Image (cartoon, rainbow, N blue to C red; front, side):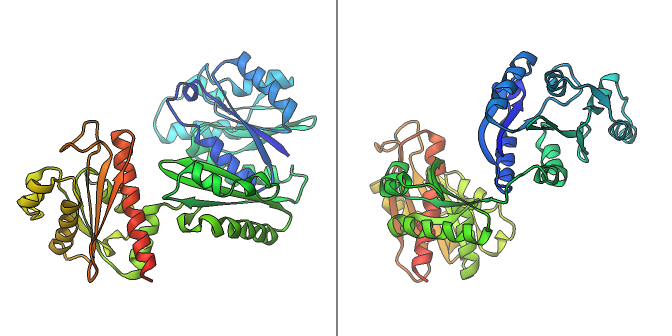
Amino acid sequence: MNAEIIAVGSELLLGQIVNSNARFLSQQLAGLGINVFFHTVVGDNSDRLRSAIEIAEKRSNLIIFTGGLGPTKDDLTKETIARHLGKSLLMDQEALESIELFFKKTQRVMTDNNRKQALVLEGSQILPNHHGMAPGMMTVNEDCTYFLLPGPPKEMEPMFLKFGLAALAKQVKTDEKIVSRVLRFFGIGEAALETEIVDLIDQQTNPTIAPLAADGECTLRLTAKHQDLQTAQIMLDEVESKINSRVGKFLYGYNQTSLVAELMSVLKDKQLTIAAAESLTGGLFQQQLTSFPGVSSVYKGGIVCYTNEVKKNVLNVNPETIEKHGVVSHECAKELAENVSSLLEADIGISFTGVAGPDELEGKPVGTVYIGIATRGKQTVVQKLELGGTREANRTRSVKYGCYYLLRQLQESQ
């Protein structure tokens, strides 16, 4: 099957919300061996929605709609589809009773327009909504299958997982499965990465290689198709091996992981503790680290030393160091890392000091950053960065580089 996902809602076009439903559905459809070739977003307008449907029908035999099933006048998805397919809308009694029960439990007054949510396409298979009011539905017309799903992810995702997948699996006419693997890289740019493997990309058929880039990182999504899942995994292994022979030193993880997640894992495995001294990053490193449960086993604490007074009076940076070299310096980063490690009795101290922007500091340009890593029993290492970008981008990338440098240091010491 070839699928198209149509998200309905003017709020998506206005940028008020992100279309996360399309990503979720694409991931789910891949597991069924269904190709998703198009994502479409259309506003709350019946004529434009009908036009989008007509276009989709010419290129897809599975069309999944999200949104537009609510009680208000601008919720017009099922009405438009009903007119387009020449089908009636009928009241689903079970859905209506569920809606009435919801209002009774919440002691709210049910208005007439809420009954609209219980209307379904005649002859459709109903997908119950256990996390909201409007049911979903699936209908087949000629050689095209239509899925109507609610817009809120908290309703759509559980509905599709519990009812939609099973209904859709019966429509799939192939045993071929799609398996994907995401390789995550850091320390190499997108262009450089692609240059190293351009011949593999040009030769791709099955598996395919798709380069992606975001937030200063690079990823490669490898996708293989085969009837046998184990064979598909072997196909991915072979391609990954070729890629790693060229750029493997920049590979740090797979799929949905992150640099800080990998760092957290290694710290736990090695039973090492860490403390942080943050100037330009303002606690961002510690915020990301403490987002993981169980972090107390490795994280001792940290100090946001944004001012010179805190650097000197709390973290005991030598005033002469600041006077002679400045706070944006190799020497200051070194003392910050060593002193925070000593002060909080941690195995590792990491420091971030630099110029986030928008203005230069101490005559040093925006993007100048020093990251200090002090490890018990080892010589302190300071890395200098020369970044370019916005203030927030410089802060975010500094944290990523800090995680990357420390992660590499810990892995090399194994």
